[in-house]
Amino acid sequence: MINFNYETDFTLGDEQAFSDWLSAVIVSENKNEGEINYIFCDDEYLHKINVEYLDHDTLTDIISFDYTVGNELNGDIFVSVERVADNAKDFNVSFADELKRVLSHGILHYCGYKDKSDEDAQLMRAKEEEKMKMFHVEQ
Image 1 (cartoon, rainbow, N blue to C red):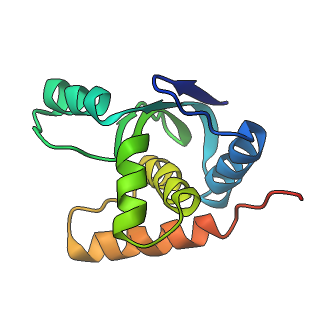
Image 2 (cartoon, rainbow, N blue to C red):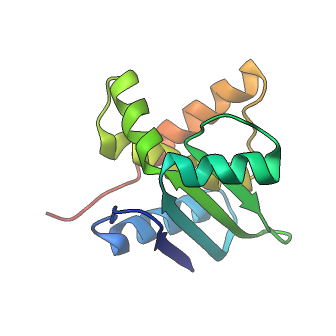
């Protein structure tokens, strides 16, 4: 089950469309969906988590805590809406596209993809692009 939680003045909009898409992303990686919680927050909230739990004194767009068991994906994914908005401007993409990139990024980490080396980061970006194309909303 995909859950969306809000610790800031942001709402996702069509939660069902995002939930369906993220479930499809999980299936496309031959994984099973457990319980995944997205927590939308601001920079201050995520910075505090970054310092307290990861000992990183930096701003970031996403922090994921992976509780995956075997092939079943479980975890908590914290997303700074402020950072996503800033990154969208920096990369000259829409907020919606950058948000989809970040949401899929957390799932891809749970699937075993890394992004620390240049080679791993390149594969992660390609996977993000692939998964973003899977998002469809009926008009």
